Length: 186
Image 1 (cartoon, rainbow, N blue to C red):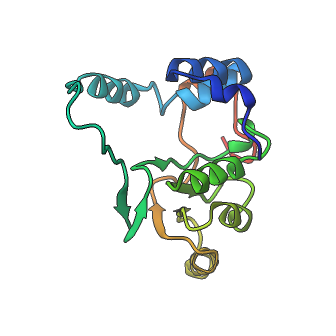
Image 2: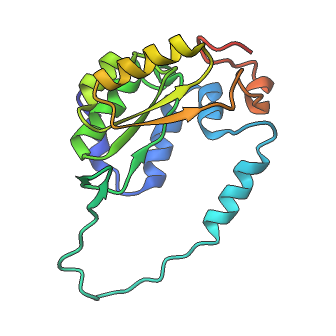
């Protein structure tokens, strides 16, 4: 998948956000930027992040800066994990494939939601060894065992078990716009 040629021209995250906002419908933008219920936790998280400040250390031994780290016993180029997101096809026709290719190319990890399209087999092939699988636990033991076996066979590095979502959560922003991700029950 080729990157957008204009993406090479981005100098700030503000430019990236503006470009994403211009490409997405209002409902999809609200979904990706919104949170559960009335978004109180989202606001508290934002305030907590805003309370953190970096202390600049200008001209202090930066000739050998190195962001590599070790995760699951393997060296990684960046200490970054692409978060799981269901319904990625509403953001890009390739769905999770685009994120998987980016994770592989940048040598960082991607957590794949078990409800994202295309499915595990396609995404695992694109991600290489960069994949963590977020598995929604909502089937019987046999169903769960089958999903685990498929993920292991696909080369998944680790699992994230999600047990708190027996049904899709309430998102006031999405309700206001009558928006629902394809394949999700209200």
